[in-house]
Image 1 (cartoon, rainbow, N blue to C red):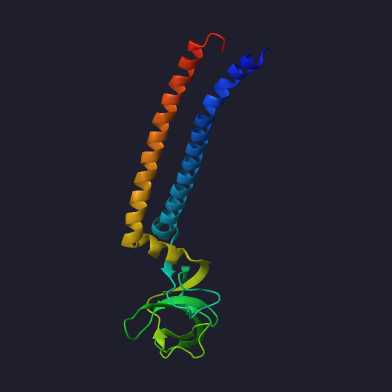
Image 2 (image 1 turned 90 degrees about the vertical axis):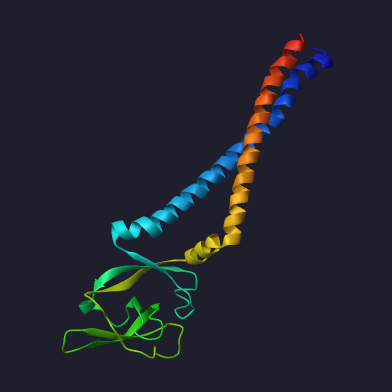
Length: 204
């Protein structure tokens, strides 16, 4: 077999190389897109569906008062516990009785059982030097106790909710879909051209 014939037999490989590269690119884009979609669905299920189905609650830690166990931006997962069973050492999420009545997640350092059956607590952040300057009477029959911490999930959600990021995500997704569509069209054109070239060369 002559060198010319060998080169002709290898010609289709040269034609197929760009097609294979585009195919690999499409597969990588598809896998990454699927992973992002799965992550978004899991996050949505965890934050929106889970609390209604499984009965837990989630809240985002805004300060460093509970570091190093809970850092700013971490999501705290809590479950209901009977108020009568709250103990010193529990980490609970509750509305503080002063200022803006914000939600706070701190450790119980004192439990007060009143004669009328109500229960009050005093709390302190693990990273704070002093006990919180209030006594909180727990409302209802349940208190929400920390069960798990999801690191930085709250920060990621806040970033994704910002207008600049949402605008950028839209254009990145739009550009990615456009490139993927053009890549598909180009690959089809290339596939149509390769057989035509082979038919035009009798020795191939």
